[in-house]
Length: 231
Length: 241
Image (cartoon, rainbow over all chains, first blue to last red; front, side):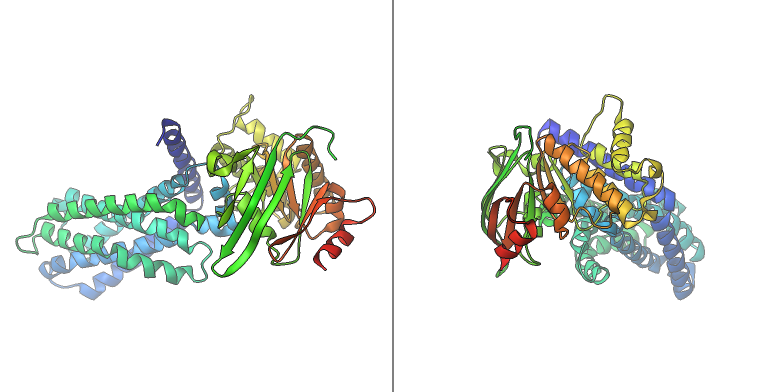
């Protein structure tokens, strides 16, 4: 990629991200929806699994990553919601920017929304399940952050397929969930290793696997996005 | 005809677009000259929107080539052409959550535009041209269809395009809005822009058009200048009969 292309990619990414962030800060629509959804999920999980803290610690990895799955799916489903109003996506696709800039801005926004919601949901879950997760705060945040990034990298390019589809709310989870399952599995196993509920497991190895998956998904998405928009 | 000499030219050669077994456009050859308004006409399903989408690079042709100012699109690159095209479509393509000014500023930044007095001035000028100065700070979600259509026209004209593609540009506009849109189209025609417009309002099309391209089932049914003897409606009827 030439220096000129790189400059226009970053500039366009920033312009689109800035627009999305400004609209979100003004309406707080998506973040409020995700936050409320995350809180409700936390209470449902807490009342479903509440028991001995030692048992809670064993179910916590599954609960956390199920939460990320639902929150991420909801966020990814809203990716192009504003572009679908009045078909604004067409105007975006018609502008002389590298189309990967659209993807980069949307991935960034989805990552912030999902990671932000999980940053609120995780302490709430810990509180409701009577768990002290403070000793694991940093590695747990990095695992969940990598997971949120993976979800955004996989789900965001797929969300463009749902633009103009007849049943986008059905189509998107159908194609996203199978592809994101390796991230979820690694995340659950990584958390279990971190909490010490899985024997002979190394948290860092699972984190590296998520990172590798993020890189593969990211590269795939960026290479295919132009074609996906055109077709 | 425009008094100024044509500066831009768009040419399509054996342009074909198929969707599986269905051919929406079949081996179309046409030249669109700058400083002329071409009325693109045809019954529903004739291939008008497909042609617009191909010319704007929203779609890629199944076969054939597109030339802009004598250079093939494959040589120029779709991104360069996109920067030179203004497009008004069936939908207004405006962001309801943004104000009229913010909508134009967003696209001005994406197009990398500049103005000696700053982008704010450019946006203000474009809003004034379409009669939306008073509504500049209002969210577009509260706009009527006509106001949103004006904003859509302002967005399309923002980069002073070499090619202006107008698919039903007068939808929702009141008489004043139609007159403003007509004046803007003629202004860009005088600049030497290639203008291709499609509308079911043949009376307006007759006023602004110099040439016509009539499509029927994906093929060219007529291409040429409008004649003094035949109204556009009659020319259209004869072509698609």
